[in-house]
Amino acid sequence: MEKYILLFGLGIVASVILLLMILYFFRKKQVPGEQDYSCMPPDTHESSLAQNDILLSPPIRPQPQDDSIHLQLEILRQALELTTVILLCSRRDASDLQLLNHATCLNDDEIRRDSFSRNAAIFAQLREDHPRIAIVPVSPDFVIPYYTTARKTGSFLAQYIPVVADQAATCDKEGINGMVILCIDREKGSPWTESELKIINLTCCKLAKDLHLTNKLKETNRQMKPVHQICTGLLELNQVLDLQAVFEATIKTVKQQTSADFIAISLLEDAEHRIAIANGPKSKQFEGLTFPADDGMVGQAIKLRKWLPSDENLQDNFPVF
Image (cartoon, rainbow, N blue to C red; front, side):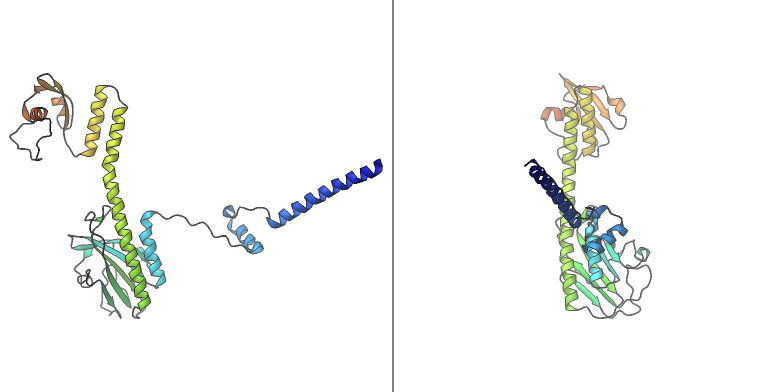
């Protein structure tokens, strides 16, 4: 009886060992080595792809926000087999055009970086009611103004892009408000097809939306900057205890908010006010001086409890102190 029990126990152990071996073999077959493809060198990755027949695309790196317009221009360039796609803009009251962004198969030194006249023949007639100029074929003496040297061009197209005009009237880091023009050219001298024109129109619509959004974001940043500065100033004020530190933090905050050359803080003491701290030209000459509480513009501001001058127009013959 004991012999049968022993054999039975050995059989169970052997079965368990066999089962573990099968599971290990099955796991090794299904996941060979559990490689981390994202960290493998190129040669190892390629051999693994050949063995397993699995295509793992490399991760797409997020592009900076400033590159979004360039990516759209590059997509358009490759889709229509263009030589150069360039985005030009000008201030609403300016007579020149400047480069905003571009995509080209040429060397960058072949693209002009300086501004040129928006009254050039190919741009002068572009406006909202006449948004496109197409030249096919391009004559040999035709000069494209954004190239540094004369180039052989078969087809050229310029299109006006309407950008919502409720933002800052600039064409730089402040935002865009004025004339925006998309220019494209290619060596092939064939006419622009309907499908190509549809792609160009869609690109212009997308660029207009992106430029408008860029203006909105930059306008928001401009509005938030003084709020942030005020909050920073209040935070500094809340962290100080003595009066002198409060004065210094106040002057620092005021200088960030304004372009004032001279700042002074006076303390009202009975019938006089005393300049406790001053900052700017000759400030040391003013610190500690006392004046009648109703004297000068400061005295009137104390009396009326309001800022002066109320019309922001200071008369030379009216003293501050």
